[in-house]
Length: 404
Ligand SMILES: *[C@@H]1O[C@H](CO)[C@@H](O)[C@H](O)[C@H]1NC(C)=O
Ligand SMILES: *[C@@H]1O[C@H](CO)[C@@H](O)[C@H](O)[C@H]1NC(C)=O
Ligand SMILES: *[C@@H]1O[C@H](CO)[C@@H](O)[C@H](O)[C@H]1NC(C)=O
Ligand SMILES: *[C@@H]1O[C@H](CO)[C@@H](O)[C@H](O)[C@H]1NC(C)=O
Ligand SMILES: *[C@@H]1O[C@H](CO)[C@@H](O)[C@H](O)[C@H]1NC(C)=O
Ligand SMILES: *[C@@H]1O[C@H](CO)[C@@H](O)[C@H](O)[C@H]1NC(C)=O
Image 1 (cartoon, helix red, strand yellow):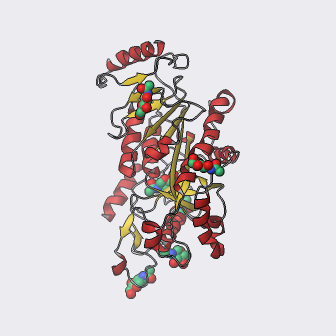
Image 2 (image 1 turned 90 degrees about the horizontal axis):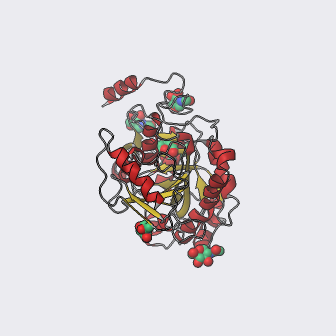
Image 3 (image 1 turned 30 degrees about the vertical axis):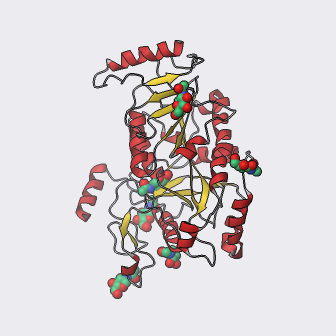
């Protein structure tokens, strides 16, 4: 009951704030055992860890586990997906989880709504984006756990149909404002690349590496097809935890040529630092929403972890066609990738909770640049055109208009 009272008074107080609409009835439900002890004194929930899932199977990895129950408290947050309208939290409010819905639009809208919700204090919260994704057999495999420093919006380019690509182009994708593949984009949208805290990422790799990862015979059988190409040694081996970067694209691309083209794009956009290994449809969108919130101090951009586990390969194995591989073959990566979200992720969540005072409350100081291509959060990006003399937002805007 105390939780209910604390939150009720928070709701009453917050509803009085200028511009905050009264909450709908029954904004949250809870089980009878909910305790208020860890809810901060102002009555606003301040989770230590927030797990970000993108669709039901990723969310399901966290339900019914022995370690904690995130379905103890449900809170409906305006702006979340109609399919996933609630955030879910443990009864002490320390660990929360939500599901964004799939693709860049769902991810950006959900995270933008979350960070604007007035009854949550997310200033010290660690966010763990924890989803499945495609993996490059050059770096990882079915069931691998990849943890990124960079997220790159690889399909933010001009695209020509394959039948109209000039013979001297290596791909049909051409960066905005340029006239050939491989040239650095000159028309910058600001979401091309996000860089997160590498020290936190490395810590997450260390923690995830203590997990015994799941694998299945069916996944091992598909993986074995990759053994004939020595450059796919990682793809043919069992799953491990790998530090490498994620590509974001609403287009679910597949096949040798697009995988190689977007691997090249990752290298180009990150000025050679990024190491492409996984593909998904949301991370840059979620990161843009977090970045905009960080400008106003609503979240700490140095507290974001981007984890993707391998559910499928981004390209076919030698001798297979790209379409057969994506549309008809059973790659069998789904089971271990979902299992490993939990197995690896729970090590990270528990370390944050158990070592909050010693390590995490104060934050893990980044030693790399963090933020976007504009340098919005300060510091000098180690990628993009504004590295040496960060452009003002106005000059960025002018540059973009000129190109359009
Ligand atoms: C929270 O929502 C989930 C379904 O999304 C449900 O299974 C669970 O029982 C709900 N918890 C409470 C306390 O109502
Ligand atoms: C491709 O060829 C066209 C003309 O044939 C030329 O203008 C263009 O610069 C070439 N592009 C590249 C990337 O080589
Ligand atoms: C997407 O985010 C990654 C970092 O997480 C960043 O490296 C990449 O540039 C971003 N791309 C776009 C287009 O926003
Ligand atoms: C992997 O997870 C699946 C599904 O939960 C389970 O059936 C299987 O036994 C697990 N394998 C290992 C090696 O833990
Ligand atoms: C990727 O870059 C390499 C090296 O520049 C180039 O040889 C290759 O053709 C590119 N691949 C694609 C698909 O653009
Ligand atoms: C990144 O590479 C582009 C050209 O590809 C260059 O113009 C830019 O200055 C580089 N940025 C940094 C920070 O090195």
